Every structure is written in structure tokens, then in C-alpha cells.
Image (cartoon, rainbow, N blue to C red; front, side, top):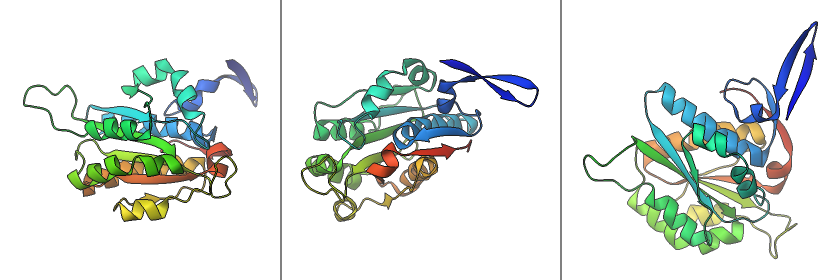
Length: 223
């Protein structure tokens, strides 16, 4: 969808897909849309640094991140442009195991990329299911040229869950650092910081995304 925005005496075309384009200026995003923007910004940042790094995303749907899989399925051109592979998991633990596998070292002469950023998404109860895979991933360590990021959707008010979901204590028990974005813009910035922290420390890093941040609108600007 393309519209025309009038600024002064000039007319500028505006495309709704600008929200997923680095260099598009200030855009309006929901928290879920900001996750996709973070994937794009990470790829652009790695290219600027002279690295060829792909992204592998897997997880399991569930509010407050319930629309993430549908959104990613609906933007194949963006995914292809930024070397992002999206494969939904059959369940949370298989998705976590797949993302952990993206951090494995390949034999000499078989690598096509410098590294892979692995991204897992799911809600609080799904984190409980994936605990074993995530504990092993964190203990084995991640690729310093890739990194592993968790997008954990928390529902402390139990709006769409049978029990309140508060995940930071479970993550702390796994030795996984937690970042807590307050809005869509911080999902992008903390996601970038999270990947950098993961590469530097060897740890899996999590973003705790509560329902109001996942579904609420916010502004984000180019990093």
C-alpha cells in the first residue's frame, strides 16, 4: 500500500513497508512489528561491519506475540533481502532446539556465512516447555559471530493465559540475561544490544516483552 504524504509544498510517496526498511526515518510500529525491524537493523549493521551474517527465526505462536508468525509469513521479500529464514516450530522446545542448532560450528570449507543470529519466540508457558533446550544452549555457548536471542512474550495480567506469565525468574535460573524493553523503539535497540551481548559473553540473551508493549504502538527511528 502506497500513500502520498504532503510536507510543505512537496509530495513524498509513503509505503507502509517503510517500517521495515533501514533508513526510512521515524516510523510507527507495534511491538510485534518492531521485532521484524530489529532483524532488519541487525542485518544492516553486520553488513556495515563487513560481516555476512544470516538470521534464523523459529518459535511457537501465542499471545502476546501471536501475530508474529503471520506477519513474518507475509513479508517474504523483506526476509529474502535481509537473509532471514523463518521456520515456525512444531512446538516450543523443537523450535528452541532448532535455534540452538544455528549456533553450531561447521567444518572447514563448508561455511557460507560468517555466522547466524538465532532468534526464538514464544510466550511464558512456552518458555517453561523449552527450558531443557535453552539450558543446554546457554551452557554450550553461542557462536561469537552469530548470537542467540529470545523474544519472550509475558502476560502478567493473565489476559490471554490460564496463569500469569512472569519469565525473568525462570530465565535467571537458566543463567540467561534479561532485557526489558518499555516500548517498540526499545525492542529494536535492546535487540541490537542483546545480540552484541550474546556474541561477547557466549550467553543466550532474552527480551521480556509484555502484552502492552507487544500490541501497543510506538515510534522508532534509524539506529
